[in-house]
Picture 1 (spheres, rainbow, N blue to C red):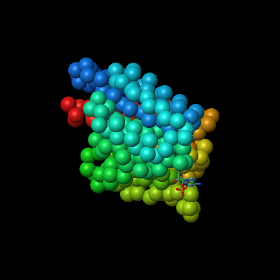
Picture 2 (cartoon, rainbow, N blue to C red):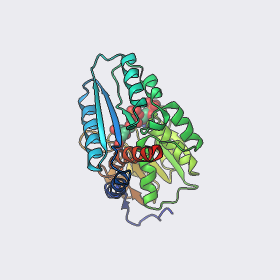
Picture 3 (tube, rainbow, N blue to C red):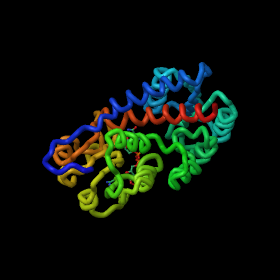
Picture 4 (cartoon, protein in one colour):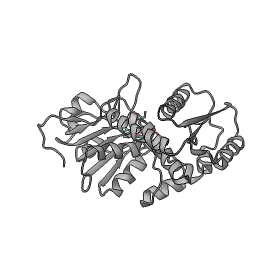
Length: 282
Ligand code: NAP
């Protein structure tokens, strides 16, 4: 259902969609009957950006009646210490989701830590097992940003089947799971990265572009096929995404603004996955 060129674009309003999902989650938390649903957030070290993200997640939990248990570990924490904390969270029945804030200090074996999270509490989609299940289309909690993008596209009833989707970026939390989720919905996928030759040529083929490269306003307006859907997962200093919004909007049918597009959907999916985990446990 891609619209024809020369029609004006429509914003994919992640803020509005998030608000409506969060209202539903609030009611579902209340229906769980008073026992606290707990999201454990684990932060290792003192990275100020990570501290802000964890704080935002804690606030979002409280706003829907969920409890967040903030676990702060010292900068010199070892992998063994972290694994012990994750084991405690795994065996605590009140904790329904575990979020280990990325990035961890370099002495930490982050892959080992992610993979220690019990699959049923992997609400941030970071375990290798969860990634495999997601890729195979088996029920799982996919990484929250790509999950949020899928939910946002669905909220606008965008028909994905048959679209050529070009994903710019291949990180484990964003580009790779994004490509898998779109493939599972019958898109034809091209994944681009820093070694891709002729990136503009690939993007020009896209019915749907997902920008996830961490480069401010990198995707140019004249790369966009008229009528394409443009999803900007980027978030860079100065409140700009990975897409040149103004220029791309001139050619797009739908586009996500920054801020207010993909960003709010990410935390909402973390909440949604935790509520689902609590409902399953009940
Ligand atoms: P990342 O781990 O740094 O990965 C960036 C990806 O972009 C890599 O795969 C890299 O390729 C690729 N890339 C870099 N330069 C490129 C170029 N010139 N051409 C094509 N591809 C290029 O970043 P990330 O964690 O996936 O995040 C990506 C963006 O999303 C950032 O702006 C970040 O702030 C944002 N983000 C937003 C949210 C949210 O909630 N809204 C959540 C997470 C991330 P190589 O693999 O070859 O290095």
